Image 1 (tube, rainbow, N blue to C red):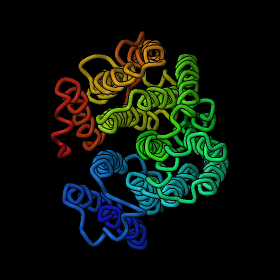
Image 2 (image 1 turned 135 degrees about the vertical axis):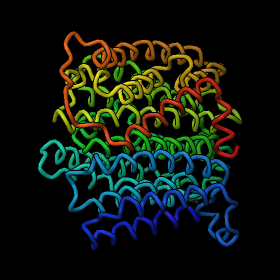
Image 3 (image 1 turned 120 degrees about the vertical axis):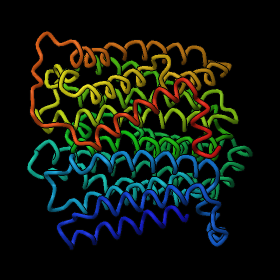
Length: 462
């Protein structure tokens, strides 16, 4: 709760800082607030907040996911000075809205009640509806905002209807009381219908196919730094909330929803990877890549054990670091070339080798190549899922095939950057120092976590 309050107050301060110097100091104020929040997240929770534990509890898992979300947000804010350079008149609003969205994500890490879940989802989502359309002169950005809002509202309807049915059958909004009801009444039709409706709503939020239709257009149309935030922080927040609801509240009826989850994962892995192969635009390819990773993450529901939350956190952190690494490169190219097609990246390694290497290592990590963090993340989730007695082996086989397909479209962009037939990337403008610093950090982090995976636990105080 302390971290939530710090980030929320930082968002308010960043918003009002826009009154002075057109938001000149909002970014620095936001980074300072995030650093303070990161420090506080390592401290024991203040006992004063125990009175709210029936609604929100900052337990070990909440603390872990909060830490990785703050780290990723810090990296994105370091990129903001260059990325938001054409938004000088309202930069403060952009940083404030991102922090408000992060506040919603933190609620999703520690909610104890379905009402708190709903509040977290909406606080996370509403600022992003605005941010998706923040590039007012771009019709694609306007389209992204409208589409995200309409589809988000549609998913919210499913979520509320599901919560209503759950309350109507169990008589409670509390996760653990619902958990007890699910064990004692595993065949309650109203309860099962509510669980399925909530599954569908949360599948929308994490972009599981066929509820992913909004993702490619919204990700492509939104400003690239906002897209990076959606692909990382929103994915972390929404997936942990999804995991928490299904494995706690609906643990007693796992047999009723696990097969539905399996079907969604299979559709997601085949559809997203096939569509990723068909793209000629790097940003849209990364959008389908993000959808495919929702499929890999979905395997966490199979073969649940005491390390499941840790495995989920490791994968999400590795994926989010890689997302920042690729999107950072894309932001730079998009600013110079005014496009994000594969051809725009041709010969990037000759002009900016550090950026190109960071993007390449990030995509190799996304593909699950050994010695990268992505490989260890996939290995841990696949090793868990294969223990599931009924269809674990089959699900892992599908995921491995999906990973093999994904290598093709990641390598395509890497080849364009490093081995072009003719380099078209000639510019006198140099990458900002902050971008090179973030690039080096991401390269080291992805390789270090891939070679020494225990570093993740040590660095986050586990």
